[in-house]
Image 1: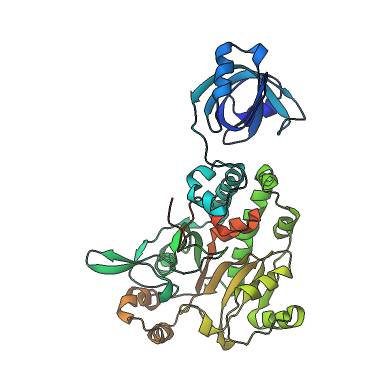
Image 2: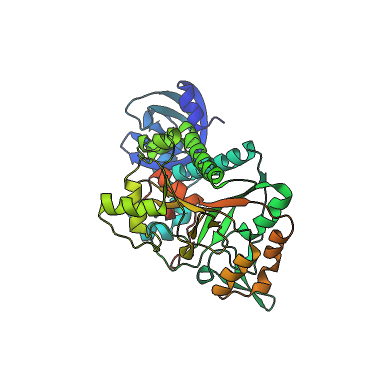
Amino acid sequence: MVGIQETIKKGKGKTHIKGWVYRIRKGKNLIFLIMRDSKNIIQCVVEKEKVSENIWKDAEKILTESAVEIDGKVSKDDRAPTGYEIKVEKLNVVHFSEVFPIAKDLSTEFLADNRHLWLRSRKMNAIMKIRSKVFGAIHDYFRSNDYYEFQSPIFQATQGEGGSTMFTVPYFGKELYLAQTWQLYAEAAIFSLEKIYCIAPSFRAEKSVTSRHLTEYWHAEMEILWNTFDDLQDEAEGLLRNIVKLVLKDCKEELEILKRDTKKLEATAKKKFPRITYTEALKILDKKCKLKVKWGKDLRTIEEDKLGELYDTPIIVTRYPKEVKAFYMKEDPEDNKVVLGFDVIGPDGYGELFGASQRETDVELLKERLTKEGEDLNNYEYYFDTRRYGSVPHGGFGMGVERVISWICGLDTIKDAIPFPRNPTRFTP
């Protein structure tokens, strides 16, 4: 068997393909079958006068998504969707499909209800290929920079990002939480491995039904010892640049299917990311966007989007107010009102892609912040131990993989960046 992409590259001569009928156009003496497999599509022509009566009858009965094997001759034809077509000599219908429920111009809700079938569309096929490339690029970056892959528990006894967004689950008479982040466990592991990363699902019980929120998403996280705050920003920039470079290199056809303007991604692959402080960001928003934000307030979606519109690459916003950030973020030694943390904000209105920080190493400060949040300190004794025995400077970040995919693909909603999206109203199929 030769796949469709290989058949197109071959360009002429005999071929044998297997796949599914993507589109059909039937005439009196000609039937055009647009066949698809995982790699591409190709037009196949069944001519009544040149095939057996049985083949013609089968071709007349074929419906969209029927599974078919075809033998024939491939040749160039600029009128065909991908520039080549196969003159059918033999046709074997492996399975006659029922009437496929997905046609043109269907609502997003209908497509969500039939996600298990919509994954077969060229759009979703292209997105899933880019998704696979993004995951591979993450592994490529970290492994080529001497990171070890490390996994942490999904069942966790403590909060990592905020108690209000945790999913509780029964656990043999106790109540545990689904992981919001691997971080607290990763901070234990770095004292053995020094540089670690993981790609794993995270869960946030946010009642947001927006174009950029999911309750279950994939999180690319890293932790590193002996680093500086600038080192951490360099790692985030390096990872994102590596992802974009590999997608631009290996996913040209998929980006074309999605009609993505690749010039908007090329800047990220080539240019340094602007780095500004939270305080500078407020001044820029006031001056250039006529948006006044009181110092101490976290940046909302509207402010992140406005900032993102001012640059052609992601931007790194550093030193947020301590009060709006997580308990583990390290105070800036030069200004205890802010933390050595940063967010990476994507261009084109795609919002926060990363959250990152140096980690606080002072046990008493950690206890003070957790007490203020109403946490039981006994649940964090294992975490405090990481500071009691040979503590050193360290930091890390978490990247929302679907947010990055959504931005790279130019998607209207993050729901299309994951095979089966989950939000407060969507948990099937």
